[in-house]
Amino acid sequence: MLFRVLVIVVLMLILVSLGKALFHLSSSKQEDGGKMVKALAWRVGLSVSLFLLLILAYSQGWIVPPHG
Image (tube, rainbow, N blue to C red; front, side, top):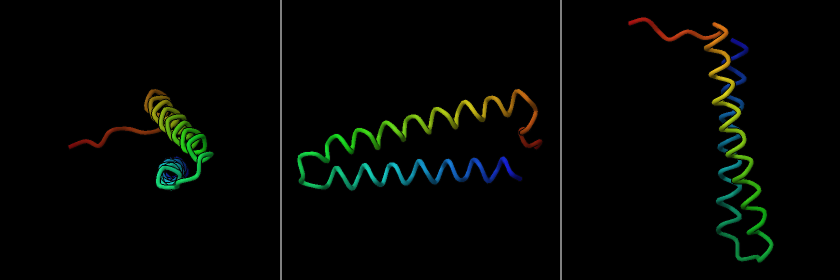
């Protein structure tokens, strides 16, 4: 149950970062370009971290695929 909450929190952080990048993309300020790049870099980092966490969890047996 704790692992499921962790995955949901990381997914929410990815969405927040993506929304922040969209906000900076739509802004007309010159310095918002760098902020957009940082937000997208955070999104990529969080996505890679989540993917590696899921691989680790599967290899350790913390999560199992559903049986049909």
